[in-house]
Image (tube, rainbow, N blue to C red; front, side, top):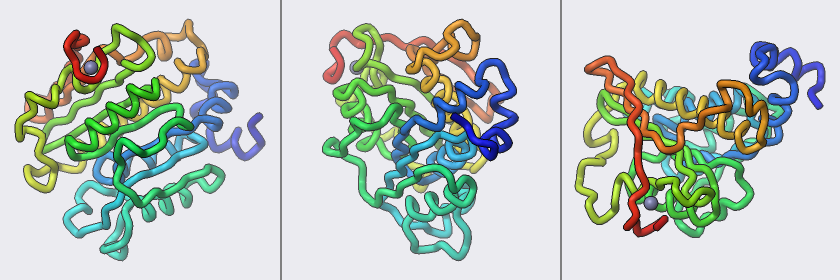
Length: 257
Ligand SMILES: [Zn+2]
C-alpha cells in the first residue's frame, strides 16, 4: 500500500477516479523497459519516473554529444561524453529516489531478455532496433509501445501481436523488405525538441493506460476502455494536426502471420 510520502507525491494522480490509490499501487509495482535514451527516451523516462512507475530499465549504449542537447533534456553541458542511459537514470533517480531505475549500457538486440517487463517502450531512433524490439515483443507476448520522431513529425503505435492473433505488429505496417531509406535518424534529417517531447508524453500516457488494461483495472472507465492498439497516431507540426488512422494485420507478415 501507499505510504504517507506516496500519498503526497502522487496526490494529483490518485485524486482522479480513473486512478485512485489502487491505480497508483499498480503503477508502483509495474516494470517497463525503455529502449533508447535519446530524444524520445529522455522525456519518456522522466515522465515514467514522475508518474511513479516502480521499475524502469533504460537501455542505450551511446554517449552524450553537444548536438543532443536541443531535445535530450535530462542532460547538461557537463555530461558530454558520458553514458546516456547512466545519466538519464541519475536524473530520474534524483526526481524520484524511491523507484528502482537501472541503466543498461548496451545495444538492444534480439538476445536481450525482456521476459520480466510488463511493457516495452521503444524510443530508439533506428530501424534495426525497432525491428528487433518488435520481434522480441511479439515472441514474448509483450505489449510494445513504439514511437519515432524526425523533423516536424512524430508517430506512435501500440502493438499486441503476441497477445492477440488479429492484432498487427510493427512489421505489418512497416515491412522490412519494403523498407527504404525513409527512416533516417534525427542526426541526419533534423528534429526540434518539442516534437520528441510531445510524442514521448503521448507514449507515457499510453504506457499508464496499458499497465491498467493489463491489470484489468477500472475496465469501465473511459481512460482504460480503449487501447490505442490497432491504430497509428500521427503528429504533423507543419499542418498542426494529430490524426489517428486504423492499421490492419498483414496476413503475410514475416513476424506475426
Ligand atoms: Zn506483423
